[in-house]
Length: 491
Image 1: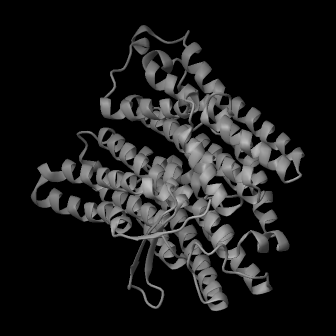
Image 2 (image 1 turned 180 degrees about the vertical axis):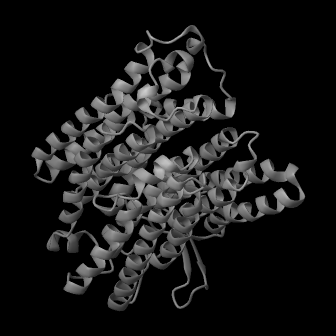
Image 3 (image 1 turned 90 degrees about the horizontal axis):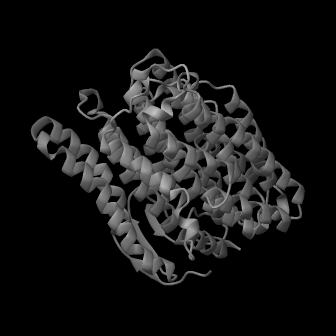
């Protein structure tokens, strides 16, 4: 799919600006006008949703929204909304509304949650900026803003585990930032440009460009929790509040993937990667991530840690589709971004509902909890089945296209890796649901009583559970069509 026609518009900048201004607005509201707090929160995430939707018709028709701001010369801040940006930003604006709504319910009537929203909106604004960046310098700027803003969320509980996890994430963020800086410097010095949309700035491989490629892998691989750069994630997810783990899994990890998309297709280009074979580095690490993450998930009794290791495996699928360098694999990779967001977002929100209402975080403590919280555990089960890749759930569609991509690449044996990972997924998700509904013989009558759930906590859970299969049961799978449009842009 070719894209032509430029629309000069301030809309991309406004999408990024609203949550950033909202963070400052919340600080002022908390000090002077507490009754303005919720309206500011609502405006900060709802207006970007409407603005992103307003851009979609023109972008899907082949137009590009563009804005250049003469800041940080000589390159400046550049916003560019092509079909890939539109696809990612639509996912981000939807889930930002879901997460903010859930977080209001999560911290309902709790004063300690007040400052959490300051940093949450900064992270959201940073994610929006990464999605809408028009060159690598702009992406670098918002990538760092997002990462540094997430650090306080990891340590927000002010526990020793939280401080340790926060410091680990902070040091990994510094490493990622330095690596990305050197990669950007090398590419600019070599090509004289950092802009996206050119089909590749690099004309041929060289040792110095390989160094830049490895630096890109380190920077974006850390954020995407790619093996062996994943070490921050299990501790961060276990120690941080559930909304922090959720926004990391649903949005922040995807900024790392998006960065690699841009590196592969807008910086290096397919021809250079096919000639050098550097894509195989990502392919090998993706396969290791898929298996390693799933195996380690078995050993975790803490629910959030199990979800974290599962997330490492799931991001492996996305990188697997990227590394194969085929159109069908790219469709599966792009679709999996959306499918994973619904599935893992639902699982994390369920874990948060369980914790807030029962104080339980250990899987071994959750026998019979399905009787107390049937809606929550039904949603958890739906998301767990989706993770395995059983039709008609979203992840079946992405794994199907990844399998087709492996055949298209002449490596059909890799389908066995997908099957093995799916079996492992079933092995560590299904027992949780089985014990939740059937492992209840020893429970006392008082423990069998249903827990009344706060609407702002449970409605987002239900929406994400429905989203895990809703797109596949209609004749036109809208996200799949978008993923195919993105693939046609590059292949």
